[in-house]
Length: 405
Image 1 (cartoon, rainbow, N blue to C red):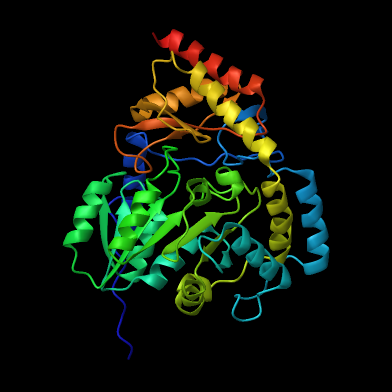
Image 2 (cartoon, helix red, strand yellow; image 1 turned 120 degrees about the vertical axis):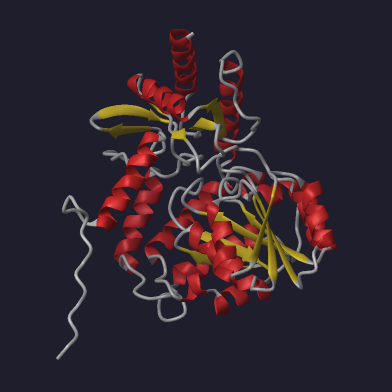
């Protein structure tokens, strides 16, 4: 006779205790002002969107060059869907690597590669790309030295590799140098955002590369928010004139490039190592070839986007000048990411709500995305915004400030 199964535990009120535990944690999160919600956008991507039946000027997206709704890219995508279909059907190493993927990787390597003869690999997301890089180059004997404000996926890559994760204070190169000098790890990797996604500032990449060279380490650079914007569109490394076989560049293609996906560009031996050993590359279906074909067209627009980048820079200067008298400071940033530091979680959410009531979508960013006590409005500017859009945002913030004085 088969053994009888133990009775499932049930709380005294008849509810499932596992569900009750989840509900308790969710209620605590909401009480702390940290609950997130999804908003349904019912219109084409662009500087103006429809949310809950209302038209809003969108300062929430990462569409820095205004390409996500570009009609030429929509046409290319439609044609590519007819030519290539809508799915890749398998991973790149099985039968999912199509001619558009290959063409895109060659263009990206030639244009944005961080060293001579660089190669590139494309990924479905930047998150997967960073998991792949770090887990392929690091192992249990590796120390991964990461800026404390890095995007979470760089840290998660170290966890996947089972490496020792050592986080240093944001931008503190001196502290990092001391740690590297004291390290006895046989393998070392420095990981950093290029443009920090919630602060908009730029990492001290030249000094980090010097440290990587001096201490025999890799330097992995996540340029998700610099690619397409800085360095004539080639990214932050190009803007700073940095090149080295020690550099591993990751950049996303769903922000300034306006489509979807990401790529890694590096020395050919690094790329081959990622291709051969990175589980997030080997064991996931490739992005549809129609997207790769669309990205080839997007890359041409990015390369020729000097006017868009000039408009974007003008918007940044206009916002910073107009916001100088506000009671909330803008973080020191020269990039399209302009964080208005508020402090308290509930103040950030109420300020965001007040702007939405005035037709402006500016998201409140709270812990754990940012450190406790630094909740903010993350203002994201686009070349598709107008001067009038930027002025409307400044006027609305000033109006809310007067109401709360």
